[in-house]
Length: 171
Image (cartoon, rainbow, N blue to C red; front, side, top):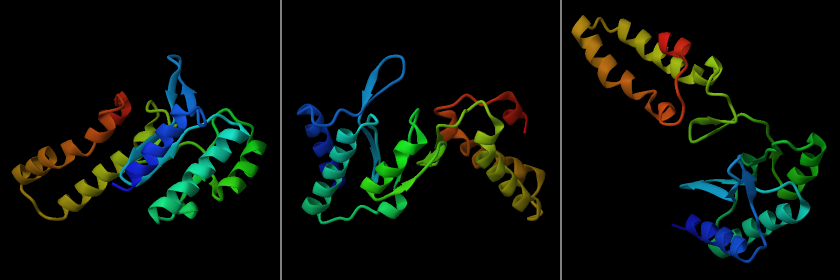
């Protein structure tokens, strides 16, 4: 509930025109942030005013809520931005510099879903599960039940966003 205060602060800053966020995609969607529980991604254009606004919003959130932002777990990532621009931004925001792809809520952001490497964590989970079940001396019916009940659920999260490549499905 407390993080909802950060959401409201960001929305209010957008209403006032202090914080603009970023324009994304061909449809020119304006996006300022994504939140899930205590995980937040902030989007902005690559300019000093937006960066300083983010710094102020985060500092106000800390003061008002009494919570502390874990800057050691935070990173700044540039998309279509000169690498030299990110160093001072990381210093201002007191965090590290990151590169795409990143993992957010278990999904790879910035990775191509057409590549097998994007699906590697799911394939790896399948192989680990199957290997442990082979050692348990399960009957054919028991293994079939486990495959249907457990393995069918592993890729659902990825499949809710990405179309599975044929090579990955065969694996």
